[in-house]
Image 1: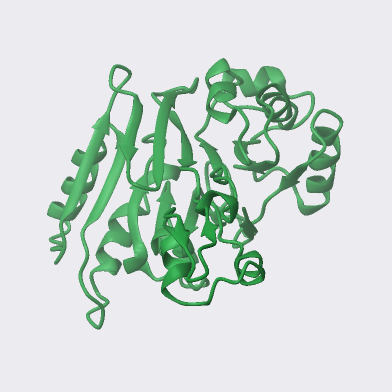
Image 2: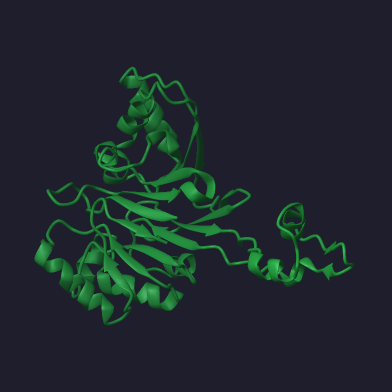
Length: 309
C-alpha cells in the first residue's frame, strides 16, 4: 500500500508543484488505484509514474474548487484511449454538483466514453460511511472550508493471521493439503493420532491500516475525528507558522495547526500537502522544522513522491 502525490500545490500550479491530486495505490491488496482529487494536469503527472489509468477504479473528490477538479474531464477522456486494455467502469464520489460538472464537460466537448461512470454524490446530510467492500471501509465528514468540503478516512479491515509453517513442520505436519486445512482454521489429526489445533499455529489477526486524507480546511474537530489513530494523516499546509489569521480568512490551515490535529488524533505520521507557491524550496525545511516542535513524525511531500504505508 502506497500513496503517490501527483500534485502538492495550493490554488494554482507552479514550476515545482502541480495542483491537488494523490493516488492511493492498493495494488497488492485489491489490484486497484484510488485517486483523491484531480486538479488540472493530473493526467500529465500520471505519465511520469507507473500508474496505469485503467487501474484507477475510484475517484474521491474533496470539494468543487477548480484546483481539485479541473483535471477530471481530461483524465476521463484519456483513460478511454487505451484501446489495448479492457474498458472498466469508474466510480466517482464527491459533493453534489460533481456529476453535473463532469457530464456537462463531456457533453460540451463532444467526448464519448467507452466505459460507465457511477456517481455517488453527497451533501451535509448524507455523510458517514460512503463505501464498504470486503477489505475496506471509507468514511467522509464535512470540514471547515469556504465551500462544502470533506475529508476521507480509509480503513482497511483486519488482516487474517499468518500460518507458522516452520512450527507446523516441527510438529510433524507434512507439507500439503493439511497446511491448507489448518490455515482455514480447521483442526486436523495426524496419522499417529496427534491432534493439531489450528489456533496454535495461526497468529492473531493483524489490524488494518488507517489512512486519512483531508481536503482544504481550517483547523476543526472533524479533522481530528477522521484522523484518530491514523497510520498516515495527509493534511493541507497552505500557510506557515504565524499565518493563522490569513489561514482562517481563506479557509485553510497552517503547518502548526496540522501538527496540532495529528497530535490530538494520535496519528502515527503526518504528511503536509497543499503547499502555497509562496514557499520556495529553502522554506520547506522550515515548515517541517516548525511543525516538528508539535508533532515529530512530520514530512512535507513533493510532486511524484511515493510514500509506503
